[in-house]
Length: 353
Ligand code: PHE
Image 1 (cartoon, helix red, strand yellow):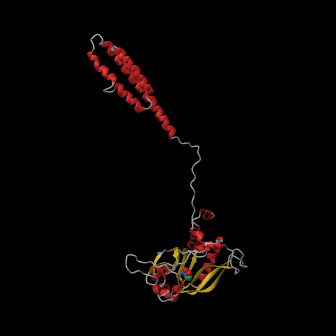
Image 2 (image 1 turned 120 degrees about the vertical axis):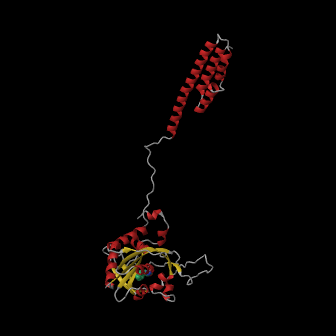
Image 3 (image 1 turned 135 degrees about the vertical axis):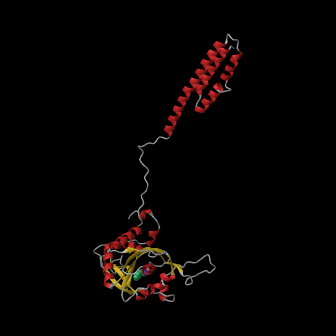
């Protein structure tokens, strides 16, 4: 076979292979096989020098035509394949902007948090400041400085979680550790009075802990809101007026309050406050167990002994304090049969508020 025929045959085979290359890397393999340094066309071209002089011009012309034909075929195919590859990529990455968006469920504030901030707002409106204290507390703040020294009988009224120091080998048990989970927010009263001189108007919301088994009306962890006022000339009338206002703000203007004598070690006199039942209006029903009243908080005038612990002069200043349970208020406001639902995170319940 003469060189011209061989070149034409290479061209025909090359064009066919280029035509059937299915992707860019297959195309490049074909290009290298013909036009690369060791490609078959290159090899033929190298052999041109060995031809008789009269054949060289024709062979040179033909081989050049073949090279150009193959090169431009590779180029054309490359463009075709890249365009196809681009089309596929665009197809794969296509975004259908007409599809409906994926909805994200919107959360809401927990009922307890809602009531807590509602009550905080009421007191901010009365000029109170918000105070905070530690949930892991010293016995001194939870009991002693609240007029319950170590042998005080009232200590056994509250079931306390004591905190043990695991790093030491003294395994502290009840009564032997002076670190505990606060059983009420009242220790914040002591912290505030240590840090600040009267006039004091503070509200201290926070978590408290008691060693109770969870049941419909008890939780081992719940939320209290403590209030403390210390100023000159504060009387029980101020306490009554304030709490009556607050109860009406929480439950509604048509609700009444009553103050029943009670005992707390850190207030004297002390009282429990009831709000008239919202279901029967005070007539007596199943919800209020026939009494017409619902107990909602404890309060009293700050005991002078407490002032003694924090160095406030009881001759000059007097004050009142109160503490309310937020879970209990939630239960009364929304007629919840079981407090435990407040800790369960059940969306079917939480979404109602
Ligand atoms: N600390 C009391 C309790 O947890 C409530 C209270 C607070 C009573 C302040 C009087 C004054 O039961």
